[in-house]
Amino acid sequence: MEIIVVDDYNKMSKRAANIIASQVVLKQNSVLGFATGDTPLGTYKELINIYNKDDVDFSNIKTFNLDEYYNLPKDNDQSYNYYMSENLFKHINVKRENINIPNGMCENIEEECRNYENTIKESGGIDLQLLGIGRNGHIGFNEPDLKFEATTHLVHLDEDTIKANSRFFDSIEEVPTKAISMGIKTIMQAKKIVLLASGAGKAEAIYNTVKGPITPKVPASVLQLHPDVIIIIDKEAASKL
Ligand SMILES: N[C@@H]1[C@@H](O)[C@H](O)[C@@H](COP(=O)(O)O)O[C@@H]1O
Image 1 (cartoon, rainbow, N blue to C red):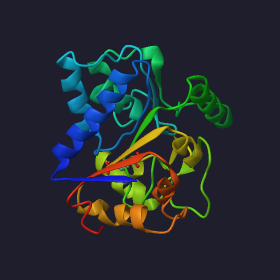
Image 2 (tube, protein in one colour):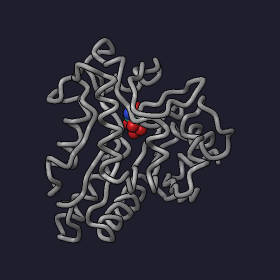
Image 3 (cartoon, rainbow, N blue to C red):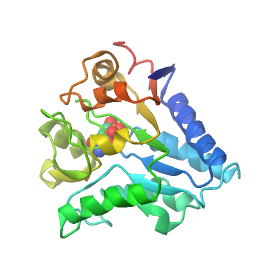
């Protein structure tokens, strides 16, 4: 694991955006894996800036998002579809047909998960996967568990995660309790992984990810086994290392 500690959130975002933009410059038809949450928002802003300076062309990329809430319509302003469109996709020249996000409104969950995995495979696999991390060490929506869930699957969200995500909803009752998420194997198959974390609230999760035992109780700890992971964190998130 390569660990890059930077001063603050802005520097973390710039560093991550530069890595993603370089990936696309080097390989125009890159397959990019994107994440949601507060953490990558600055990275997406920087990517839009780079795009507006004409420094990178996204017209040949394919994208796959890590996860989506189950049973929340795409046009709900808390869906990850909506988030990606508002915070990145509508500002750059990615082709709509090249955007993939699990369909949380699907009728057949198993079929949706299988199709999502197949579409990733057919695209040649993810070249670069961006990750945030939950306070409990979750990546995507792979919650702490007794075993690693391999492929795209339906997840029952932890109380912790529901509480953390309730800040985006009017009340905690409105927070979806289930999601469809790429599995650990899906994430581990990405050729390169960039994990971001900012703030003291993530310090323990980062410590456990980097220095702790590899265990499904800290899903991100499995990244210790990946050959090409860059962890970009600010000083506060690095404070327990
Ligand atoms: N499914 C997302 C994760 O992909 C994200 O990494 C995590 C942390 O979010 P934040 O960056 O807002 O702390 O939140 C959600 O649970």
